[in-house]
Every structure is written in structure tokens, then in C-alpha cells.
Length: 144
Image 1 (cartoon, helix red, strand yellow):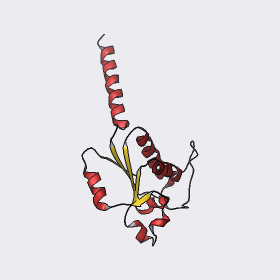
Image 2 (cartoon, rainbow, N blue to C red):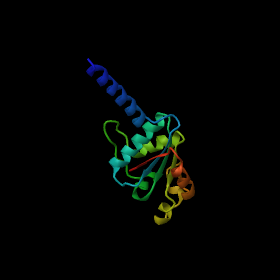
Image 3 (cartoon, rainbow, N blue to C red):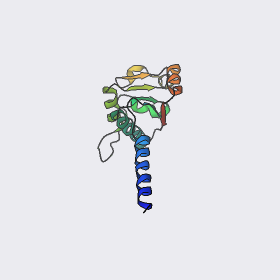
Image 4 (cartoon, one colour):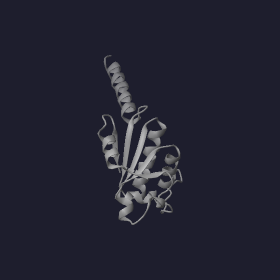
């Protein structure tokens, strides 16, 4: 007899915890840092950034190293099933929706490029501002 209420309570607690862990709270600050050159990894970072944004999180994205190559105009695009979109397509959608998308300040000079090489809306990060964001209590940081 006691077994059913205990199982029900455990189930309710599991669902409650799952929703809390996996769903971005309204206004939750989230920083996605993308360094991987792997297109599938970049795609997953853009999918999770997009989903977090749609759920009300305050999303920021920082690209560094070879991961930042997708921010370049005309960069190679790989479309993924089942949505038949590329990481760049999702990135552009996030920029259009006002998400802060930045590249590491070492990236452009290291490639002998200027800000004009980036897709519109991508800016160069200020390390001090990124550090301020990272140390804010409650900021969730995801790296890819």
C-alpha cells in the first residue's frame, strides 16, 4: 500500500527536478562558448542556444579559435537532418533575434582579418565584459 504513494512521490520529484534542470528559467543568463571546429558540435551548440533563447533565457555566445570560423561570411556550411539547417543558419537566426554573438579578440588579428569579414551582427568580445558575465552568480556556462 505504501509502495504506490512513494513511487508517485519519487516520480513527481523526478519530473520537477528534470524540468528545473533542463528548462531555462525565464531570465536565466546563459553563456555558450564554442571552440570546436566540428560542424556537428557547432550545430548542437546552436540548437541548445536557440532552444534556451526560445524558453526565455538571456543567451550570449562567444566563439573562439577554430570554432569562430562559422562566424565568417561565406564559411563552409554543413546541413544536418532532420531540420536540414546548418549551424550558420541557426546562428544568423539568433543574431536576428538580438542574441549577443561575439568572437574572441585574438581571432581576427590572428587570421589577418577585419570585423568586415564577419556575418552582420557578430562583434568582437571585450575580455573584461565577458569575465564580468562569467562571474555573475547564476550564469550558466556551456562549452562546446
